[in-house]
Amino acid sequence: MNFTRWSARLPGTQRRAAARAEHTVTTTDRRSEGSVPAARAEQLTDEPPPVPAVDELPVREVLDRVPALVALVHGPDHRLAYVNDAYTAAFGVRPCGEPAAEALPELRDLGLLPLLDQALRSGKPRTLKSRKAPDGRSYTFTCTPAAEENGEGAVLVFATDVTDHAEAAERLRASERRQRETAVTLQRSLLPQELEQPDDLRIAATYQPGGTEAAVGGDWYDVITLGGGRTALVIGDVMGRGVRAAAVMGQLRTAVRAYARLDLPPHEVLQLLDVLAAEIDANQIATCVYAVHDPNEGRLVYSSAGHLPILVRDDNGTVRRADEPTGPPLGTGGWMHASGSIALGPGSTAVLYTDGLVERRDEDLDEGIASLERALAGATGTPQVVCDRLVRSAGVTADHDDDVAVLVLQHPARTGPDSELFRNAALDLLGGVEAAPRARAFASGVLTSWRFPPDLHDAGVLATSELVANSLQHGIPPMRLRLRRTDRRLIIEVTDGDDHLPRRRRAEPGDESGRGIAIVATIATHWGSRSTPGGGKAVWCEFVLPKPADRTD
Image 1 (cartoon, rainbow, N blue to C red):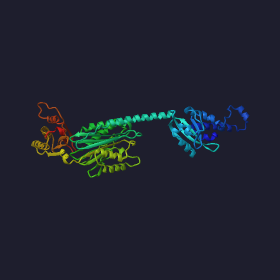
Image 2: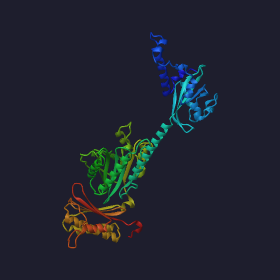
Image 3: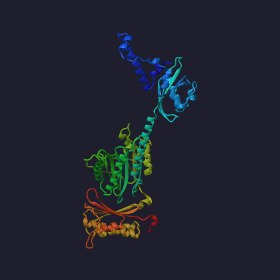
Image 4: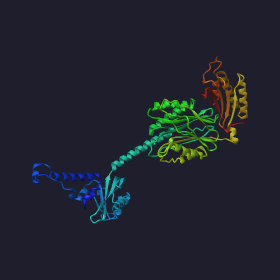
């Protein structure tokens, strides 16, 4: 057997050792080429005698001492010709002369026999990395073709023990899996466990974490009922991955809920969030869109901080983008955000989403949004059905490379008996103090026509009287009374042109005022006030209606 031919195909460690031995022999030969005779040179120098050349080394002795597992098979059926001592120690004695399928069952179980065929046919080495053998250890197998002196093809199999590396890699993968599971658990726990369902909207949402190869990001969404029939909707994406991004997302979501209770315009909410995001982590930014739906206006008022545009599909299937205004992401500072609006009438569907739904590495972002528009144009059904269809049309699967959050809201077009449960009535408060009795009479007539029970009728008239009196005393024109009923509640709202928001206070026995808001807060289920666009304020209260089984006509 010619060992030189094999040495060129040995794995790195053995090949380098052979090369060093050959270099030593060559150097020694060159030094002995001078004018000094060899015998004299041996007397005048302390150099060791020349070592044998690689061709002179006994092949079997070398292979038996190699720490790697070595096996030699020859012929088309890969009959076993030799295994070294390391191979025998790992797998036991193997019968020579038998085909590898019977003589080397461990290679058969590892699927290595096709690799032997490939190496024999192509004349090129083939490698199978880090496979766990029956002895419980992991090996990297290299099949190197070698020519026999009789011309029959042979394959030399080297197996290097990589158990330590494999175990370290598995520990790393297990650690990454635990970190991802922790991040996913944290992410899901910080998202709404159950979406609030406003009276006038139908809402569904979905969150799909990235696949096992992608770290979880900070996508989030929320639905917040503001009172007075209005609803806030928010979706955002914290840049970054893992537990840190999820934690920042949780802080922003909590802050949004707190700011929403102030009933501020969308751009003012984002202004507050921008400052907070910079305080949480100056190196971490987030995109966000905050929108408010008012059923009385039939519009979605929104503000965007670097987020993707809201898409709205009207009742005839036309899809529009709410592109402007859009400011920079949260945490950048120095920007005055602005609010915009888009119509959301009965029969319309709006979609808020994160970039994982539309962004692809091999596709322009605008193309992804355009594809989503086309999918939304043909998506009908309940909000959850629309949500699922959009996710499927975007090709989002369990191994998707980014988080995806989608929020779908519909403003139903109510007809028939259902429409009788959603009614509006309004009265402009003109004149002076005589507007108060007109407002009471108007409220009494409307509540009677809506067939409310006597106790709710009387409470509604009293609340109307107090809110109108408060506006006449402390507000300025224009003033307006609005009554609204849904299938769940009665809402009474009075607007005027004064910016000062009322607050509840304790009236002393001798005080002539200060009791109106206290009375409203006592008899109503909820009450509140907010500034209105263009100046002025709105003060409202609402009463929860009795369930149908509990109502008495």
